Image (cartoon, rainbow, N blue to C red; front, side):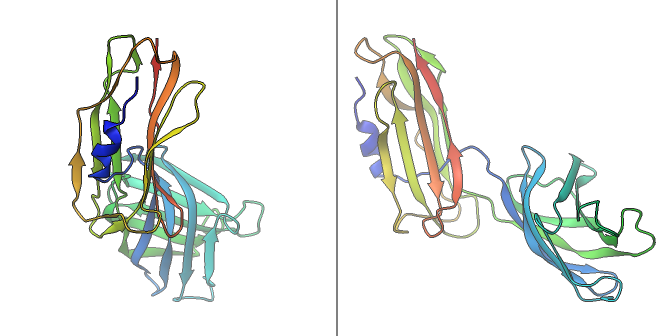
Length: 263
């Protein structure tokens, strides 16, 4: 049967989640050749190679040809991302609806590919322009960088994806880390779900902001035996998963779902 040494182990530790979630990248010091600037941020999913959301404001410089504009999913719903290559970086284009007369476009091109590890990445180039053909109404990005703080990690890896009587379910990797450079308050939930039974919460803590990952914290409790399989356990699909949220906003910071079967 499932026992609870797991609860005691975690009560003396802290935690996080492994699926790499999209990162929020902030534009830092981005200027155009006419003295204008670009500010704001976008959320980029490096695994899927796509923009999730964006809020990029351009202003200043030659505002006669380039009036201030905010690129959002509503005002500028079109986006495309070209496959990144190590020597080319990540190339992103955002624009107004093509049905608009003289739609506004912005191109953001990083020096190296953006990844879900975050960090600081320089611009290779970029452009703000009017109409699809540009028509000479263009201004180039001449400086700036993309900045993203890496998210916390909870990496749970089980020893198998199916088990029979006599075998032990083991978390070979049970790693929790804060690769970022600032302390991070988190709310953590770890749970196990059995067939035909309500979800069993293993750990739930930090909803009051009291659980803080310090910069560089990195803990791996694996290999950690979870439970031995015997005839008393129901057959079917199980889940052993974890999730991290920001306790102030409830934003999901990390989410790791792990499924396995008892045969």
